[in-house]
Structure formats: C-alpha cells, structure tokens
Length: 118
Image 1 (tube, rainbow, N blue to C red):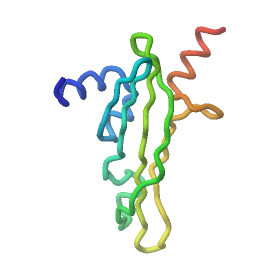
Image 2 (cartoon, helix red, strand yellow):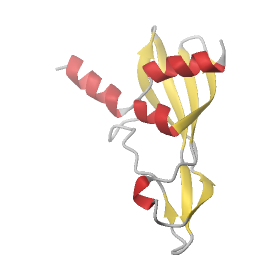
Image 3 (cartoon, rainbow, N blue to C red):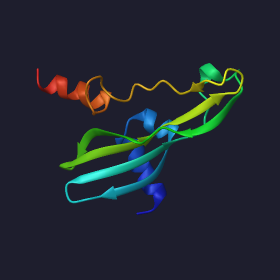
Image 4 (tube, rainbow, N blue to C red):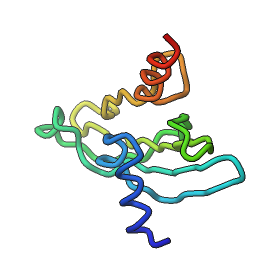
C-alpha cells in the first residue's frame, strides 16, 4: 500500500487534529494491533505567531489508544514538538486536548465509550 493511500485512509479514521498537525512517519500492523507513529509538524501555534521561536526538539513519545479498527486495537504514538522563545528562554508548546483526562485513550474515544455504556 502506498504512503498516499495510507494517508488517505488515516484522514478518514483518525482524529482531525492528528491529521492536520502531525506527519505520519510509520505504521505497524501486528496480530491484534495497529500502531500509527506521528511527529508534530514544525508549524508555530497561532497564539505565538508574533514571538520569535526556534524549534528545540521533541518531548518523549506518548502512546494513546484510539477506536478499534476491524477488531484490532489502535495505538497512536505521538511525538510532540517544542519551541524555544528566543526572548524569554522559555519552552513553548501547542496546547493539545488529545487525551481524555485520567485515561490513555483519545478524547473522542472516551466520549464514544461513555455514550454506549450509559
């Protein structure tokens, strides 16, 4: 499967924020699991557009669980970027609401599970 085809499928299945702000760098299909690996793009957050920032590497990879696909568990391995404010010397990051509080699953998946288990 070509990477363009995989990206098209990912656009349909994965949270929109992941597809818009992250690069799909790798995927693995294991017996009962699908793993997608994403790295945040070097796009400065809108709230910091007027500040001089320099890309300063990445945070350690975080793994969260998303909706199952065809009976296989889906794991998103996300590597977030950080920038250095060259004026203050402080680290700046984009504020993500990807993971439901108190869980290791996406917010969308947590909402779905709450609805079906009412």
